[in-house]
Image (cartoon, rainbow, N blue to C red; front, side):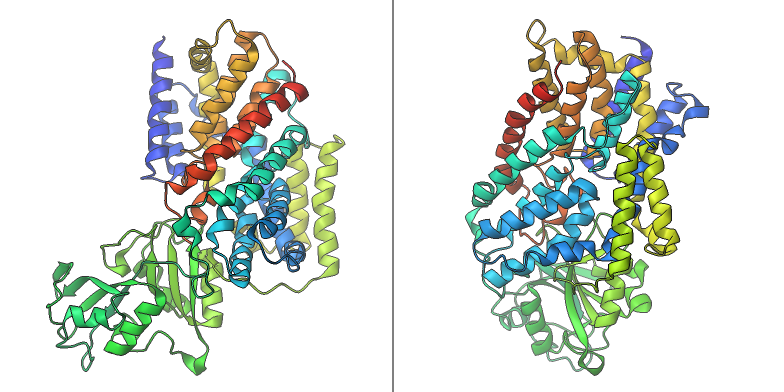
Length: 592
């Protein structure tokens, strides 16, 4: 092993550990990894940032802008309306919802597709009196399956295609992924509809009555006992009994002193700050009965507001939220939007810091209070996903026809070879902006910049794995266990390794790491790289074992009331289905 290979493996290993650890966001980790390979001489300084001009990066940008244009034109609302007649059994709901979200995810950003379907799924569960937990995880998994169908379905497909172009001189075409992807998606949907939802643990399935359908447990609210509050001189135990102990005092702040887990006989004094934990209903009961005030509310109750128009809205912090990494204090929610953060929930864990000092993370559930218009502005600006169905947008036939024509035109231009895929989609995106389907502000807002930075930074690292022979070294190590056997065993091993990796790190990073290994593996076996690259494409998109494997998995953690360990119960058999279906499909469509 050469010194260059040792450095490359060290950088790769540290990068993977940091991705899994999650202490820093994946785009920042990727930039540091890029700087590491540049400073160690594995990547020339003059080509260090070439990845940001890579066709795959430009195509991702174009697809994201086009996805926003389709949403603005109302095409998604039109499709979602088709779900209206479907009522009753969870399997019936899942059939329609998974087919629609799989189709959407094949052509648009899958996080955006789930964001549109999430409130619809919750509301239909509420309407038909079953737990949202039965449908949200299958819905998230179906959105990932949809990405396996087309070139633009998910960034890993574009990454794999670029490595194929380097290996054989031409990239994968728009629907080259479809023969395998459609079979995998159909098998996955059948599993989710017939079996998958039944694997949800019983205690999550019981949250099925109407009052619980949109409720997230274990919020933390911060309240103060101002002068004249009925809570003053009462004990902690008396405060908790106001809600029959459904809301509990988990901490007390008195001046500069913080009292965690205060005793039941601890008396409340004026200006004490209480951290209450419980459901929105229990919190409201305690606040109103004890005369407490939410910090920043000047003594108003949870339901008071100007002209009676105040709303209390539950929402999820999306992976693209500008609030991530910031605190409620630094965001100035009240000053900017006239909205107040009442409470926050994070994966059912108790938050021990002051509410104003909590740093937002993706997947946090928040409870916001304010005038309806102000809440709507805050949700849009901060990329919070409301857990209530939004009003169906007004259809604009001309805009709908134009947006659809531009999107279909970009696909046809690519299929007919009239222009490269990145040029076709950037051109269509520019025309959407030029025709005001997407505004200039929405243009930059639509782009998932962390993913763009991740892909742009990781491409040179993938190149370094090839040029230093590190990819060949890793491929040789993988092949050592199946040497002398048929190539199908190497294909199976590569697919399983990719599936395991993508369950813990970003799917684009997985594709960037595994693609050069796939090419080297095929070279050592003397076969076409196509089946191995297709295995990487499928494996990178199917992260079903953990909530950290993909952004969509994290988004449904809170509203579904899931726990970390719930994912493998449905995800493991689904990944087995993916392996069973995809390996023979790849062998038939992309022979060795």
